[in-house]
Image (cartoon, rainbow, N blue to C red; front, side):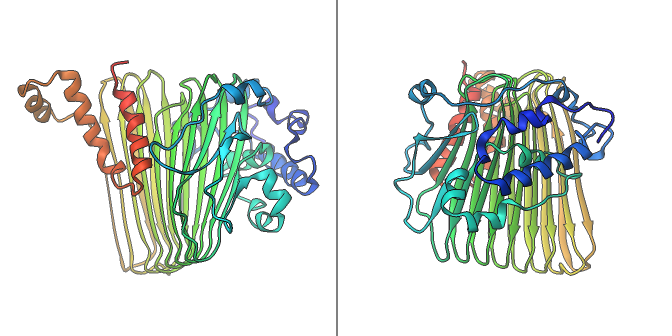
Length: 435
């Protein structure tokens, strides 16, 4: 264990055992205990580690969290958020726990599995066990190991062969309580020639000072298509740490889009393995930091393991006041991954002289027949563009909003589902509103 930090109380066995999610499944209990021991041996990451050098987590060791709960009062009063103007399959989790009353799976095709983890272990145990007991590199992804030790709930989505989901899957995680720790685990599997569109959304509905630790695993089988979207709009005093693991087989496509607007401290790791030939990965992220001391840290890596793979990684950020953003993107090309084509970029727009960005694009290439490029910028709004709009009688505040929206547009406008795009734009417009 890292001697620099004491064991947080939320890793005491009594706290873990008080979470009764898997009481009826000794196999999972044993797995969780093993993951807890691995995390304790590794310890919380510190700023002395390269991958965490800009993000200070010492405050977590001194925090006190309570067991999450969901009451009937909450279920009766909460307004579940819908994808705007669109039908969807909707699963809602309140304080990390599944709410059947707020969920709606009536549009789910009969052969598709989409349920909470409890139901998955009850009705689809053999399928989910192939995925949920996966071990990760605890040193590289300590919070994925922590998530496994503290799992509260999550979804299991399985799209069988030759099945196309005609409506999106909306997974909503709403936090309504103070000082809770939630550890949600989502498993998404698209079998051969299957296709699905997913929106994973995290928001606060009255919750304060909580800790969200979420892991999402995506498995794209041959010739499958997965369009995954994530919205992080947590409380501005919350902590949100997430890992997204993507594994792709030949001729598959996975597009991911991340919109981060909330949390005092947000960290997201995206790890993509292009395991077989002719795979395609597109990773897109946009973050808007509007408050003092707001901090977001994005780490993304694409591993080209096989030949003829294509990847694109584009992150954009807008920073106000005394906020700080970190970006570390890496493309790793293995020796056998000839004919790889990869592009990476990180662009940041500074609306305050007190904001700060640390950006680090990387390539590590061991093949000799590749096309790879990268770029990063940190700058202010175009003064000439601002002058042009002001000269047309547009107020300065509105002109700034117009230019900032345009800066975000080329990341979000590539989203194919119009309802999800409208929902994300609506949330951005709320950020820009006079309120």
